[in-house]
Each structure stands twice: as C-alpha cells, then as structure tokens.
Image 1 (tube, rainbow, N blue to C red):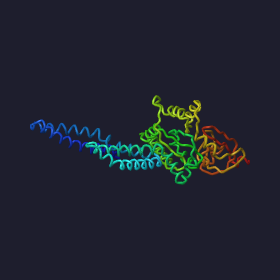
Image 2 (image 1 turned 180 degrees about the vertical axis):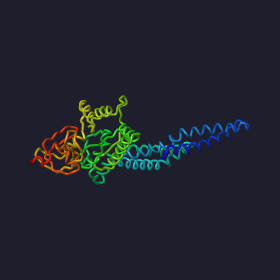
Image 3 (image 1 turned 90 degrees about the vertical axis):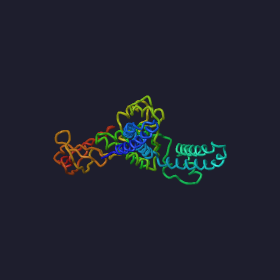
Image 4 (image 1 turned 120 degrees about the vertical axis):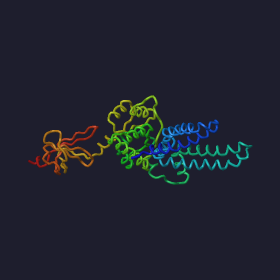
Length: 355
C-alpha cells in the first residue's frame, strides 16, 4: 500500500521542480546570461526536485497527522471549551476593532488583526486549561446537572502505564463507576504507544493499535475524566522510571498491570493500582469440594493432566483429565492457589472422585 508520505513526495518533487525551473529562467534574465538559460533552468529544477523530495512530508502530511493525533487525544470537553474560549476571544476583538482602527496609520491596519489572533488564542488557551472548572461554574450558575461525570470525580490522580492501555480492561472498569479520580496519560506514554503501533512486528503492531483504540474509547467515556499531560522527567530516559518519578512528583497513584513496575513503584513509596490484582479479586471463588462443569481444551504440563478455563480466564488444571480432551465434564475442586500473577484451580473429574 502506498503511504501518504510517498505520494506527498512525488507531488512535491514535481511542483518544486516546476517552481525551480521558473526561478532558473528568471535568474538567467536577472543576471543577463541568456546563453546560460538552460544551465540555470536545469540547476534550479534539480534543486526544486531535491527540496520537494526531502521537505514535502514535513510541510504537508506530517503536520496534518500530528494535528489529527492531537485532536483525537484531547478530551471532547476540552475541545468544546477551547472552541467557546476562541469564540469569546474573537468577540472581544470585534468590540475593540473600531477603537483600534482609529489609531494613526499605518498602525490601524496592523493592530486589529494582531489583537484578533491574540484574543482568539488566549481565549482558547484559558478555557481549555480551566475547562473543568469553567464547566462546573456554568453548571452551578445555570442550575444544570453535569451527570455522572461530576458525581464520580475526586481529587485522586491516576497515572496510566502503557500496558494498561494495551490490556483494555481499564475501559470496562471505568464504565462501572468504581474507578474514582482523574486518569492522567503522559505524552511520553502516548509516544511509546505509537511506537508499538508502528512496529514492524505484527503482534506488537496489533497490540499498539489496540491500545490506541482503547484510549479513544476511554476518552469518549463520560464517567471518568481523562487528561493528556505534557509533564515529563527530562533527566530520565526509561519510560517505567519516568512513570515512577512522575508519580512521586505529582503525588499520583500508578495504574498498571506490569508486575516488575508495580514492585519498583511500591518500593519507592508510590501507591500502585494493579489491574491484575483487581481481576483476581473479582474472579469466581471455588472452595475445595465444590463442583462445576468445565470444557477441557488442552493437555497439562504433567502426564495425564487436562486444562480448561473459566469464563473469567481462571486456569483449571484437572488431574487425570487428559482423556476428556475437547469434552465438557463435571470436576471437583481439590486445591486453590492465588498469587499476584493470577489464580489457579486444581481439580479432579467428579466421576473419579465418586469411585
């Protein structure tokens, strides 16, 4: 598939080559060298060709892609408030246009458009930075209810790791309303996520794109507020270490399912919310002696073992269950092992237990 950058380079080469040829002809006339017209034409065309080949994506597709990415990553509430702020700023500039037009020439031609641009910029910036506070104020003054979004807010900050976005369970957890606080996604985490999505390895690329899709869905969620932040620790290069240091600086909890990262963060006094631990806590609990139906789908690591999975993903190891491969059989729990990395249930076929 032809990329947009490649198409832009082709168009840019042709366009700037034509512009260079025109400049070459003008240069030969300016220097009064009609006999060197072809040399000027060829040289400037070559310069335009090379310029278009190298520069075109940086002035066309890449800024557009960056703008599109920024719009997707910005919460809709912030975009809406920025639009309102820009409108108010331009309205103020319109009121000032007539007085400013009375200034002595030539300043009366320059100052009004400059004031319009600055007013629109400052209005959009102020309203986007204080979007939530302004929305709260408007809701209080107008007597509107902002729905579940405000009801679920708290002062807690939740700093998100790349692994959580790729995992995807955060979206479903946030929809339940149990996750209080503001989700903060650092820009360097998004950069890492985009690098994964652009990987040449198919598995990593699919994981990265899944993470981007989960991020978009999370931003559309009206229960938990999501913010993209530009805070960074410049002196640290490794992403996990940046997250730990940033959590300490911002007094934020670290939301992750990366076991080594969670241990490092806990060792440095950072509050860690591990999605895997939450998943273990809400999984189905069976005690020794209980029975349930299980579909055995594969062999175990030991001889004559069969393995199946519950609906919540819990692995069940069935002793003497190999002969029931691809069948559903009632099993009886004999032992339960719970660790931070997951939960494993050991069982035996109920028919064997009866005998």
